Image (cartoon, rainbow, N blue to C red):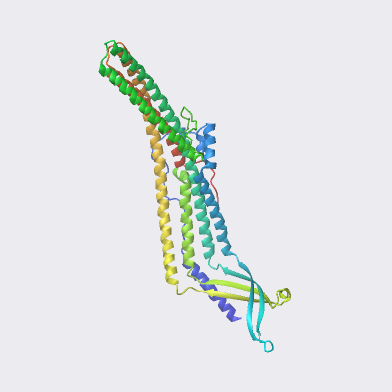
Length: 465
């Protein structure tokens, strides 16, 4: 009785010693030095409560386009298919923890020598059917760590998909805003061209009547043709944007998609404290899952230096005839083995060291992702504030430039002012209008960027594992 007890005590001592040598990793979480509030001064308490991109606007057609892109975009489909493939591979990784069974059928022909009577060589057939079972007992949890690493790598890939989906939905909304802004710019350019054509007609009449000069007529014609060129440039940009949006939607880029003529109404997203915001972001979840996966791989690499226990068994039947094999007597055997890596210990030790370094690298990547996320939110909040100031100032500039334009136009018609002053005043008015249109569009686009930065993407659903 002493020998089994001695073996059991020795095995227990090995297990305790091995477990005590395995590195313990702290719980993976966000850095503790996160700020309690955002540094950018912004009246957060007055903001509406929103939870996702689709909560920011009430445009049914735009909602339809976003959903179409999410379901039909080829690149997002490819990402989803790769995610599905990874799920199949993950199921295969879990099978390493279970016993493995194999069925084998073989036929063997052996030479029995020469028949003394006939002189012919004698061959004997032997048929064998066997069932083998093998199982590596996961004493130290090495295989469990490998499986856990694969699971968390898969979870990271899931959040990568969510990140790509959110970015796609945001880009569709931003391009819709861009299309509306370009259409507004086109309308302004056309009004400008109509005005310049009327001025050109007046300049022609004045020149023919001897009141105007050739220089005035030349300036008027020059401005008219420049306006035509600007309209052509805007149209080309408009159709390029439409084709880009159609590709995002998974459609053929015909350039025929009809857009709204006015900018959509997009609300300011709800802002939460940094710690809550970060945990809602898919890229942060990706970084966290990758750290956990690296930790499991590091533990698995350390445990690879420990003894490995395997059990295997086989049951088989043999017969000289295939028909008689069912009635033959079965044979079986069981084998247990304890394997301790010796000659590859240098490679295993270096792999373990490499895995530890990879954990540190993933932690550094997590910290960099956190810093980038904080910057994106601060940038978006700051942009919202500055764009609001610019919009207010440009609205005043548009009103004042309208007054100046009307004043110089009237004076020109009365012959009290030259055409250059009038055209300069009109150009200032058009420039102010175009810039205001651009700022308003950038402000709406920034709110979409802010929603992503705050972790409010296409869906506010966060998967739990």
